[in-house]
Amino acid sequence: MRVLRLVGPFTLNTLVAFQETVRKDPGPLTIIDLSDVPYMDSAALGSLLGVHVSCERNGRKYALVGVPERIETLFRTCHVDDFLVIHPDLAAAELSLLGESADGTN
Image (tube, rainbow, N blue to C red; front, side, top):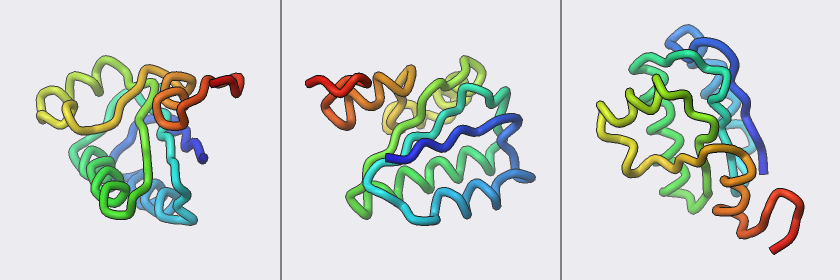
């Protein structure tokens, strides 16, 4: 499992670095922590949708965690909140995707 923690605005300016990182050595599970992202633009949203599609096609799992309210509103407005995998925090994502709690118990 790898956790990618984004910090700061997620926009076209930071997109290339994000895409390079997310494509490098894709494991069976990627968690993207958006806790410290104050806002994102449409290009960034498109890249998250790309992660979703890539994971679906290749049988990998992913989750978005710590999604701020402003970004949740963007997801709802764009009608992508129903299919993006979103969890409130890392522990909840691990429990759902790995079937175990953060302390390793089942």
